[in-house]
Length: 304
Image 1: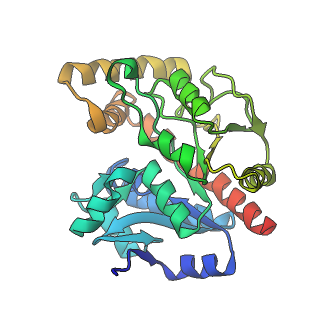
Image 2: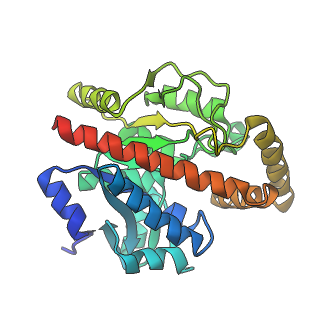
């Protein structure tokens, strides 16, 4: 049988010893930022994880194998190769079968991290229920994966281009705990507040680790979403972002952009409309989530 999983030496050593490991997605590198800023971000994310106590495990599919932890050459491929496809959970099998390259989304990173024995994953923002989903049922696979895969996901809420109230309703329906990190207001990605109330809030890595262990001890197999707001000094106020997002959505509608192409288009258009400010915020909030994720991974390892 072909060996599907390939671990970097430091990730393999950390998992064997029970040391903290933090999963990182690769779509933000391959499709979320322009080159070479994306490569610089990937390096900085891994450095941040190490700085705050965890071994980084950037996950991707390269040459038909699931790579758990990447070296410098592999990061370069992700950042610069135009043939790297965006791979959600449903596309893992086909990508492995064809021997291609794939950048993992939130859903596929969660699934592969869990199978690799990694319990904590940091990203920028999750997918969710798209605006107008009552007509076309456009709902991200990230939400399905959160309902069935026991991994802690740290994010700055869901991407602001989505229908945030419906996203929270869907997560509630699927029994996914959504816990504010030091906040009771659901973050709106670029903005620290959406005005949507959260009913649970925790304020330390130790509390998050304790909550996750309790969930596992009770046989609850869903993931856990930790909603970590963007720092105040780098956020873009909600009122300002709402105008920009509405403009980007109108532009997408005029061009007939739908489905899996919609989110990349909207994020790129928002970068244009904010003259690059949204990219700066995206980078900073993602690194902040890596920081908190590393601390949570360290707390979980201490409890083992």
